[in-house]
Amino acid sequence: MLSKSNSSLPIGVFDSGVGGLTVIKSLLKVLPHEDFIYLGDTARTPYGSRSAETIKRYTQEDINFLLRQRVKLIICACNTASAIGLNDLPKEITTPVMGVINPMIAIVKENATSNATIGILGTRATINSRAYQSKLKTALPKARIFDIACPLLVPLIEENWIANSATRDVLKTYLTPLIKSSPEILILGCTHYPLLKKEIAKLLPKTLILDSGNALAKSVKALLTTNQLINSQKQPGKIKFFVTDSSTQFNSVAKIFLPNISNIKAKQIIL
Ligand code: DGL
Image 1 (cartoon, helix red, strand yellow):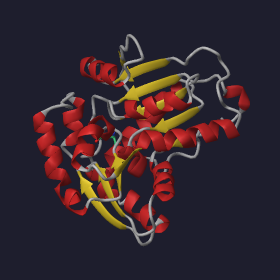
Image 2 (cartoon, rainbow, N blue to C red):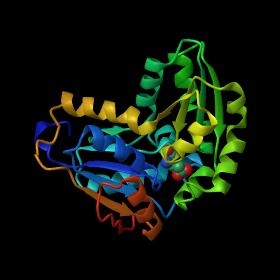
Image 3 (cartoon, rainbow, N blue to C red):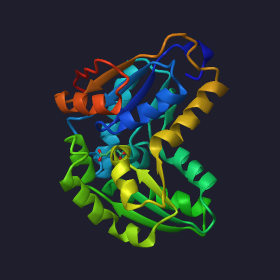
């Protein structure tokens, strides 16, 4: 599907819930004329506490939904699905599917000193998959890596408990080992976590905090440009939102996170 004739098609983006909106926000900055179709699988969030087989099945179903919408590129805006669900996709899928892990490793490599201390926060499934740790070891063999699974953060964010004292306490407990080692770089290895970036930065003021959206947006723009797939329309792109469960919470978090987009109303669908 990497053909110039597909340039006016939308880009499909999916996540287990609101997390992928942080990726959309970064994509809009560098690709303002692209149309997007966003799927948040809110009925089955969080993915990060599920087994590998379940994550693979959910990922495949999300991709199948976006393929039915006719998109030119699929972005897996979920670290958990990128770490586990994108392995062994059926060969019949000709639409390119991009995950968030490789673009992040590239950005870390650009920014880190060779023996840097690097922290990784992620869901339990992402941390246990060791996807980040093994790629980082190859890219920066002398780096010291601290990985921390934070399974309580996604449910708190999906509830819109962002500037909330309970969330701050949970965050502080998870980050205690990192506060001691004050890493040079912290990878937010879950697309939900940028919603807590301000709180995280207060706890780690000297650390460079990297999120999936910024890392990925650069790679997406390069892929579209190389393949002459940039949408040539003059007006700003449109976004259609789909969710798999009641969309009230999703709409309110989306409005906070994407304040420039008016009237966000996700349509509820069954996968
Ligand atoms: N935002 C996702 C991620 O990047 C999914 C979190 C979850 O559903 O557990 O991992």
